[in-house]
Length: 351
Ligand code: TXA
Ligand code: MG
Image: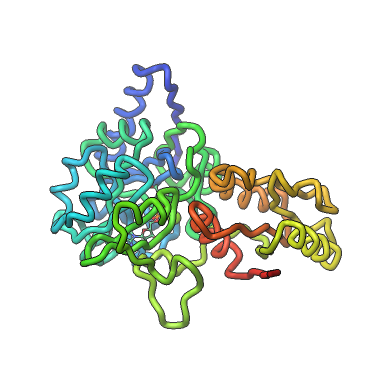
């Protein structure tokens, strides 16, 4: 299969509309289109067409029990897809939609089991990114879309990442530049009595608590589950975001962290190792192989660059990667959730 790559131009509405019309034709004939959102790139198919959705699992190599998010481009589209919208869900929608938050509802029968991974619930997201909205609107159907990476690899935040993973396996990529937030959406389950955070993201737990103070947090958000324990978001059980290198997180005061990573570099031989550092610490390391992920003073820059940096580790062929840890508050909870998974929970705590 040849993958067509089409680039939108924010200043050229006519060109963009032609692109969305072509993409809609692919979707409405059961094909796959990757598209940008404000979180990461998604790999889209018609969420109401089980046969089309199956192709997503095949292209990504994704386990079929891991359900997909259905994307909409207007609140009205929600009512045909889900049942029992609670007052808490309505408050969350009002506060954070459109935006980087996904809600899990009880599903209506129109959602095929391929999209819901066999569950009786369905995850819905209303993205804010203009290209995503215009694309979904042009298709005229909800768009099922996981992140557009090969299963297990870091999520794509640029069209080139999608091309690297999926070229020849999907019909089209809409290139809309780099993604603003860079981490996948916050997921909240609103299908039960009390809302529950299933995956942390740029809509932070602190922000959610302002709207739904009684929100609970699924255990899988914070750390590794014990043998036999199941996360509520099936995808949280899989190894994820991993570069080929073996990743170790080192967490403590910045001074101790730099000191310990320098010791590890000496122990393992600096040439084959990479360090993921911050603006504040980058000059402290005894190696050239330093990737700067962002600034501790602006944690959103760390979130936006995280997946790109993990992909770079493969590009440079590092065998071992040492990454600084971050405090687990606000966006730090989502950053550490992704880093811990990338590291297989391999973390050195210094304090
Ligand atoms: O930001 C995002 O959410 C991106 C963009 C493309 O929208 N999408 C994304 O999809 O990250 P994906 O498939 O990579 O992650 C979806 C997560 C998985 O962990 C999955 O198990 C969980 O959502 N999920 C989907 N449906 C669910 C449901 N009904 N109940 C619980 N978890 C669900
Ligand atoms: Mg994913």
